[in-house]
Length: 214
Image 1 (cartoon, helix red, strand yellow):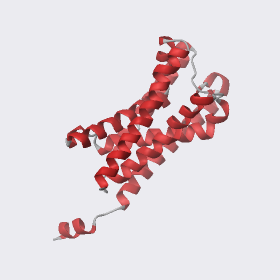
Image 2 (cartoon, one colour):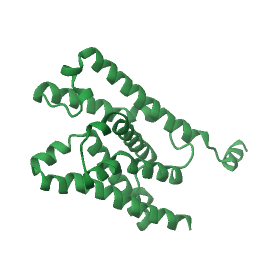
Image 3 (tube, one colour):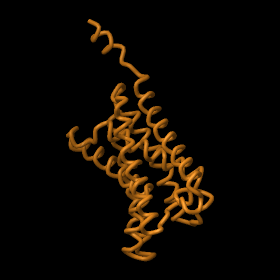
Image 4 (cartoon, one colour):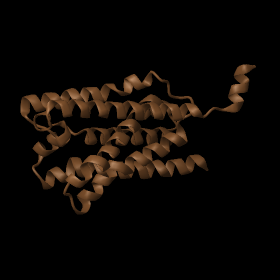
């Protein structure tokens, strides 16, 4: 019964995440500036994270349907993507929501990418990732992508004068404010990642614990 409910949940999660990404990567460019808009859209942390979430849910669904556990992404990958989508959600609601002027379906998709998929992935991780599955050294692995994206944003700003968000524009904000913002971001990302690992480590299986002692 539990597996059936999880299967239905994952079908729903795939449909929601796939719809959100399809709109941003296919429909919006067709209605807008075509392939140039698509290429530019792929440069956003939000979109890259959304693609990761969609792939995670798709692989989990395929793994469950086929009965092949190896297809499912390992816990440390799912934990990383959960961290990134939480970061996207917080930044969207705290720093960007009031600055984005989207209406109708576009606005609905924003909330899918900036909240709904994070909640769905969190639920799936809670239901299907075993306690004690995360290790503290995963945190260093999880920080690689944010650091790489920061390098990309700096390169894009210096070479192309392209800044995807106001807080990444070191010319307008000033170097001191920019550095402070980046430091706070990384403290938040590392802190959230540590919290994810800590909460996973809180739960123990009493039977396994006793068997191990024996």
